[in-house]
Length: 163
Image (cartoon, rainbow, N blue to C red; front, top):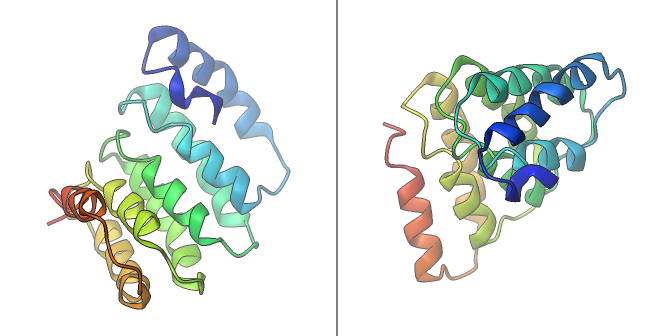
């Protein structure tokens, strides 16, 4: 999470590379906040090899998480993927997040919806993206909050490549 403000520099990618073996060896079960913080921390990184390796290392942790995701965790997790690129590893994260999105019963607000959709902006219309979009539809329909102009723009902007 702390890396989100560092930018996509060589030094920050070096930190990701140094953290990778620790993420891979970690046997603890991540909770929804730790998962969302980890993914949200990647929001400033482009789809580099280091990012793809970290995403791949996070997938088993996401799959082992039995805790119900809160709305904020769904939005932050997807938002964190916004610059990671449409890679096999990022699609693996989407597939691992899908059951958590489907099980989330809380009502999303306009910011969480726009964060979720905006996080998908770099993804082409793959099966994983279509499934995540389908899982988000009931959450969007249950939202009773009026959208601000920025939330409408961010939501639609996020759909630009989803196909």
